[in-house]
Length: 401
Image 1 (cartoon, helix red, strand yellow):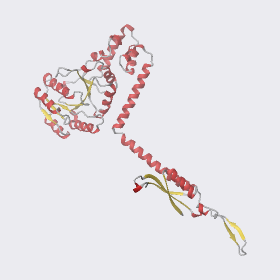
Image 2 (image 1 turned 180 degrees about the horizontal axis):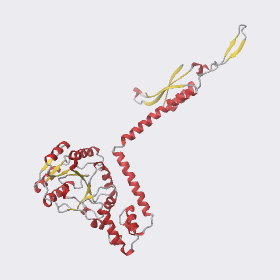
Image 3 (image 1 turned 90 degrees about the vertical axis):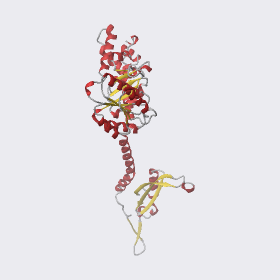
Image 4 (image 1 turned 45 degrees about the horizontal axis):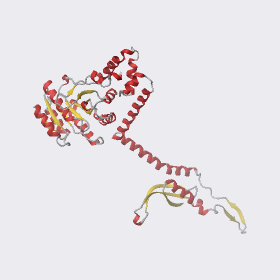
């Protein structure tokens, strides 16, 4: 058996050298990646593929011409030619060579599959799912724009997504044309009413966890909720903060607690929050959290642990600002989806002239229901329960109907 090693920049190049040197009957024994030194001190080393191959000496190209041996008799005359030694069926060699070539590729495929499986629970996968949902919505909107429906087209021009515009237009198409504006306002308000979550006084002491991006007004909204609960509903309220990142956040909420005359506690860990929740079991807990970057996956893990520490009392409210673009609103909704928000709270309505993008978000299936709307900094005057007729009026000025 003649054994040699061949090195090439790729597996195919190394195998080509094997065939050139040892012939088509060569048997590939193994393959592996190696580093080939280049330049002074090997600083320019590159990755290559080393193939170990073997061939029977009788089949080595150097032995060509010796495959047939002339036999001489006793008289020295040339005798009949002895047939060359017959090698084994080469099919088994092809099988082994095939395995040597395919197995490294199969290993790479298995590693890629494992990488995809690891990504299935990561942020990248959630972003990908969000993009798929956005493409589906876009397809529905394009279909609506092509439908040729006059009313649907006017609703789209007013800012409503095409999928919702076509659906609403189809609902009122059978009625008299002169009643279309009134019917449209009624049907839209009815749809929005199903997307609201009005707080109930008979739910018992809750633990409200406010989450959301930076700058949406979580702390001010928390103070408004505390004022409404303590003054109007006569509930026992405690303000808590888990925002240990933002400078001044603790002092701001502590000042609100002092003005409202309610307890204030600082939370540094989920375990501490669980102990406070047990100690304040008769009080409604209102918990502020830190806003973080959209790419901060660690922050979501902390929020999940806070929710778990509160147990069944927990209610998660995702706070979003009305002036935010629809694409960013949807991105934040996807980001916090793993927290399973119970409701949405929309702030800064006074800072936007066109909150129609919020309607598109609310009308989508899978969006948490709306519980509160805020339109100013006054505590608690600028916090209201959402009204479906008023929400519908955002979309339906006279020229849109």
